[in-house]
Amino acid sequence: MKQREQPQAPCLTDVEPDRISSLPGNLIDQILSHLSIREAVRTSVLSSKWRYKWATLPNLVFDKECLSVSSQDHSIIKNKLVRIVDHVLLLHTGSISKFKLSHHDLIGVTDIDRWTLHLSRRSIKEFVLEVWKGQRYKIPSCLFSCRSLIHLELFNCWLNPPSFFQGFRNLKSLDLQHVTLAQDVFEKLISSCPLLERLTLMNFDGFAYLKIDAPNLQFFDIGGKFEDISFESRFRLAVISIELYVDIENDQSRLHGRSSNLLRFFVHLPHVRRLEVQSYFLKYLALGIVPPKLPRPCIDLSYLSVRINFNDLKEISAALCLLRSSPNLQEPEILARPEEMITVGAHANFWEDDYWSCPVMPLRFVGIDGIVGMKPELDFINVLLVYSPVLERLTVKPACVNGGLELTKQVLRLKRASAQAEIIYLNP
Image 1 (cartoon, rainbow, N blue to C red):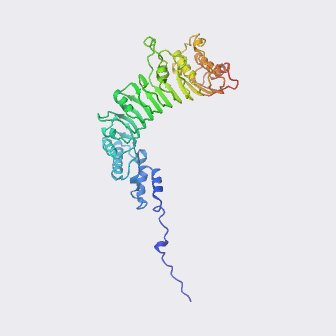
Image 2: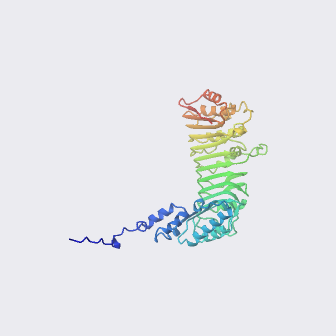
Image 3: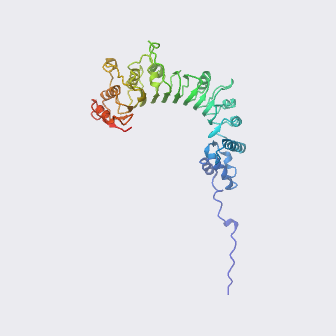
């Protein structure tokens, strides 16, 4: 009788290889790039090949995803966050392209100075610091020596560059929100970034005059309290959104004989394609003598959003000037400021004056939002309907439900130059 053979132990070469360890290095890098810092560090336990792979990550983001703390004690959260950043920066061996520090429990700890000094020696390209709590954090002088910066984003910070600061020569994107800096500091900062393409300013203080000297600027988004704005040279600006938070003095006697701010604002903006005029900025543009049309038309402007007080004749004039001066504008959006509407109507002869007679406007889709059905609003809508022969759709959205039916009836009674014009009513 033939004996049954004993099974042999499998050779080492027959064992299925470790698939995780055998992954190509570039694939591992791609996997790690989609993980938070906390998850990336934890991959060290997968295999020896993964142990310190995270330490070469070029993008370091420290936010709520990198911290798992059940405690509500802010000091415990802060201390753990500090230890995590210290640990990562200490063991990191590769180049650092991006550093982002943003946690809702983060206050301006002095450790940020130490980290910034470390990063300033690493040719960093993107630096994002968002201090969500406490007083505005004073940016350390070492950050202003980062000549390789391409993107800089600061939240709740105070900027006071050292005397040796010569600008960020490679910076293309600057985002400053809830910041403090002096007038001369702001002007020098902007003018010393020759490659700057994107500029965001929100809730700033320390300066009130916006002198923008950045010839390569293409995107400009601003919201805050300021007194004046000017562009120092011809710009490539294509997208502009401006919001003036506070009402301004409309002292026409003081401005007697002075040309409108519209002329000063647009003289260096020949290529603007999208423009958003929010809050009280239209009132600023209407200061001075408003011309019927701009001397140089905005031929590239294809989208315009304007917030307007229909009870202010100067603002109405400024809005009409913009519409007349934009031959390729097809989709304007008109937003009312209903909180300022009172029962006083516009001057009876305002719309009949030949000075305000409109040329044909190529508007195709128009949106009117926030109106209450008063005569100045209906007169404005009437002008749009009469002088827009290719109009396809007019969308009306009132500020409140009350009176919506009556408003719709009044709008439908208005004459229109376009037989195809459709009027759509939207519930608020």
